[in-house]
Length: 370
Image (cartoon, rainbow, N blue to C red; front, side):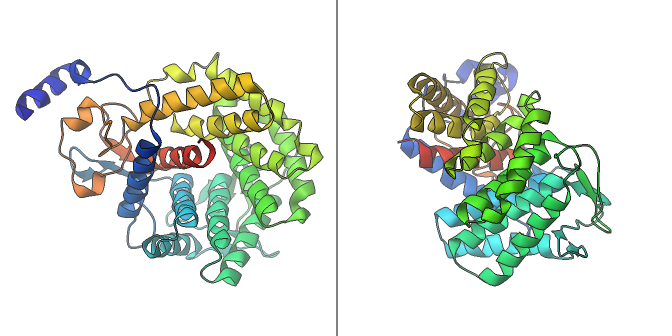
């Protein structure tokens, strides 16, 4: 029977035996998806502390390639998982990851800290922001060498602030030999940096960051809001955190969040995208929560319904999940693949950032949705 199922999946791409995705995922399914996603991130970590960037779980082979920003994103979600569930195994994995980025780091004359990745002559400013977010999550646990990790976090934030251009946005890249900033602003990098600064200001009571954050938020929204697809997830998370501070200058950004979210669900047709759009969920879920807290019932209902529908759809792309699709069910995964998330329904390459984004979105849903 299994041979027949496999043959049918190969011939028809699994379509004939795929069951329709449920309209929403249960809380138990989300909890299981979160557990599996963290399991994959831990299993994908190398002894050096970075992560296997891409793995073809059907062919059982590592796929060449790497990306420092996405490596840093995986470290951040692993740190968030440890902040949520203080398990000693997770702590060891987080410390290995943070040590990887700290190893061979560069320091500028004013004490700003940046990452030097082996073989890289330059990297994106977003990598520094995501390493800062990982350090922040670890500091917030109150465990480990707090003085050391707080100092690292401060150094990374100094580097972000030093990247400011005359137009208020950030230089998009930096040279790894001396940390010199260069390049055009990036909607990703500006959004990631804004999130790192916003969360540090909110959760560590860094009021000294308030004015530079306001300047960056103003410039980034003006410069990137038209690039909604690229700017959406990071800026929405950042603006959500800034609104949560209660500082009055950030309250009007609620409308920015709603305008971008309405575009995602409307002209961008987010619900009908065939590829994995967990990255967009990272913006949609806090947008739904913001609409709820502000009493915008229509948007809160629409956004939450869309988020639940997307979560249910994306859970079908996770190896080992109870609602895994026909392509996944037609193959026997090895242990290291369990919990990984595919980019497409029949694409066996598990890229670390896809699992990272989806695991984080599930984490958000567990925290924000009843």
